[in-house]
Length: 238
Image 1 (cartoon, rainbow, N blue to C red):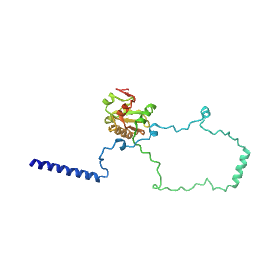
Image 2 (spheres, rainbow, N blue to C red):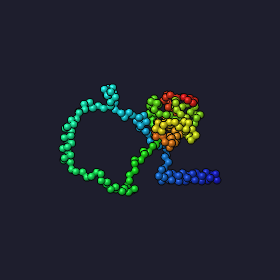
Image 3 (cartoon, rainbow, N blue to C red):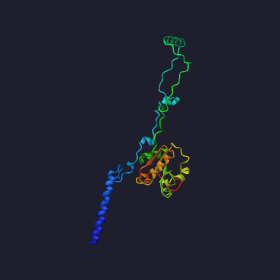
Image 4 (cartoon, rainbow, N blue to C red):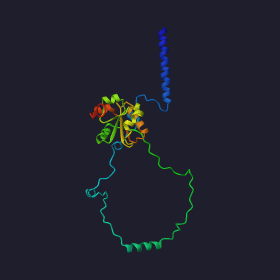
């Protein structure tokens, strides 16, 4: 009988704790989700054109391409008549009202520091997620550097072919050797093991903090890359 009372008392305490926790979560401005939110919904997905890139230059015609000109205007230039031009200028000067003396200095208007406008602020840079398809497109174009955020042991077992190993926990020690010579505007694609792994996002944010402006996170990770049958390497330098 005594044991039953102890069990009921413990169950009552657990229920009271659960009720208190649920109540606090309900009034929290940022409540914890009942179901785990997929990683793809916690970060923004990049547009394919932003990841792969597009050619902003319009195609040239065959004739323009041959002579190296991008203009499509084929009109012949007209040679001006000096006498007619001088006559036209004289007639315009006669009708034009006299202008004030340009040599006379004009008083400078003081500008209050509060009214001075600053230049445009730099756009906010953030790491975005990208799809496996877009990541593979950059791989085929050789336009991106893939960066493996996992531990070196996992990288040696198998990684995206040609990827650089940069274990995020050793970022400060490994960065210079891994990416120190890579231009800041070069496209970087980080990845880890699978969509639930957070190392790739952590590494991407660290790279943005170091000044890299085009950083994307391959959501599917190494698991998705391998399941798709895309090229992989093993060990260092592959």
